[in-house]
Length: 276
Image 1 (tube, helix red, strand yellow):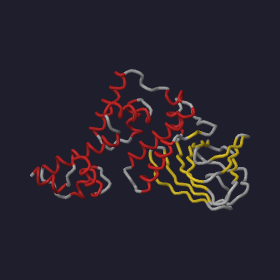
Image 2 (tube, helix red, strand yellow; image 1 turned 90 degrees about the vertical axis):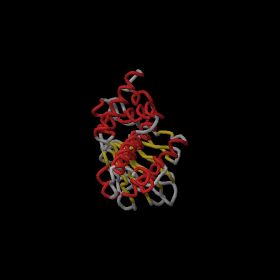
Image 3 (cartoon, helix red, strand yellow; image 1 turned 180 degrees about the horizontal axis):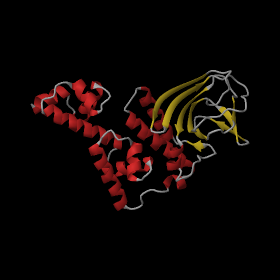
Image 4 (cartoon, helix red, strand yellow; image 1 turned 180 degrees about the vertical axis):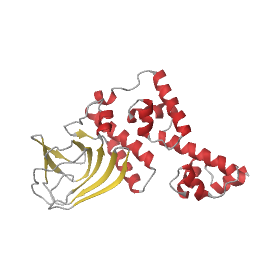
């Protein structure tokens, strides 16, 4: 449950669930009026308001929330949601495991208790991410973007804990990038969470460090490795693109075709003719 009692219509569509993270599109159609005390969630969450306005009461404090703000929830936290207007509201919620919260907060298992002002850049990125998730984009890319967005929002409130544990020297950052390259070369399907665990760095910092060092994201690097493997197979005479897509970790043949065209500016057929 997110924000209203059972007498009112709540639509919650889970668009991504992986590696201790869930991305959900939440629509509330509560009419004007007071909510009920006792609402709670079972996990940590950070919620971006997309449309509407409502008043959240938690920990003895009332906060008016609108599309310029995000807010956090903690497990078993008692809260109430009041609605000053009709027509309800729409939100994007990121539910996080305890381990992800600890990585974001430098070992602390607590998200900010006060509202977070969302910059125009953060707000646009959250909407772009939601749009990509609705189109069933690459799951690894969605997880990486989600963690960077959540970390960016939390840093708006307090950059200290989020920045703790970050590799502090150029040599250390280079070693992290090289380690990630080695692990991905062995298995491109390794998730961001798995990579971070093996390299002993938080997932969002690994994503940032890799992008700074390699010039592209981990998810883009993963796709590039898969495309190069596809080129090698095509050069060896492989013609069954559907089988190739499945074996190399693409979601389907269309994903393989789009990725190959993006990386090479050629279709698989054109590449096959050239390499053959």
